Image 1: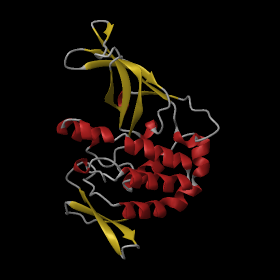
Image 2: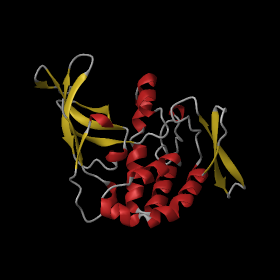
Image 3: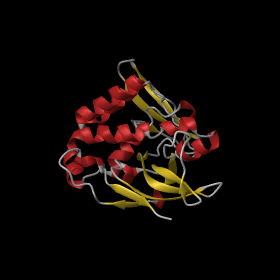
Image 4: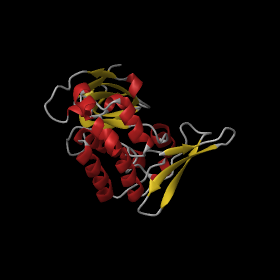
Length: 239
C-alpha cells in the first residue's frame, strides 16, 4: 500500500496494486472520521494485499513463535490491509465476502503463517455480530475499520440481569489474538434474581456480551507446541 496524502484535504488515498485487473485500486479514508471509512474491497484486491504482505510475514515467523502472540505491528498491517473485515457487513465498512471467498483468503494467509491465518479468521468472524445488533450499537462496536475484534462464544461467564444492563463476570479460555483487539465478546449464562434463566425447552439461557478490551485482564496461559503465535491465552472480566 502506498499512502498519497496532502495537508488541507479531507480525504486520504490509499492505492493497492491490482495487477490482475491491470490497475491500482483506490481506497478512500475519510480523515474527518476516526481512522476513516474504508471502502469495501473484492476478493482479488484482498488476495493481492496478502501477496504484498507475504514476504514480511514470513520473515517475522520467529517473532510469532518466540512471543507466542501476533505482534502489534503485524496486526496493524493486517488491519490496514482490510483483512480483519472480510465478512463484516458492508454498511459497517466491511467487505461482506461470501463464506467461500473468506476461507480462500484465510487459507492464503495460513499457507504463509498458520498463526496469522488463524488470528485473521477469528478477527473477521468476530465482526459478524454487527449484522444482528441495532445500527447505533453496531456502529459503536464495529464502525472503525481499523479496530480488531475477538472473543470466545462459549458461555464461560455469568451475566446478572439488571433490567437494562448486565453485570458480567467470567474467565474465557483460548482468546486467540485478543491482545490486539479493541472490543471483545464473551459468552455468559444469564442469571436473574439469583436463578439461572432457562429457555422454554429447559436449556440454560446464554448470550454473547461485548465489552471494550480495556475492561479486560489478560492472562499468560498460552504455552503450546502448535499455533504458538496466536496468543490464545485466557482473559477475564470482573465487576
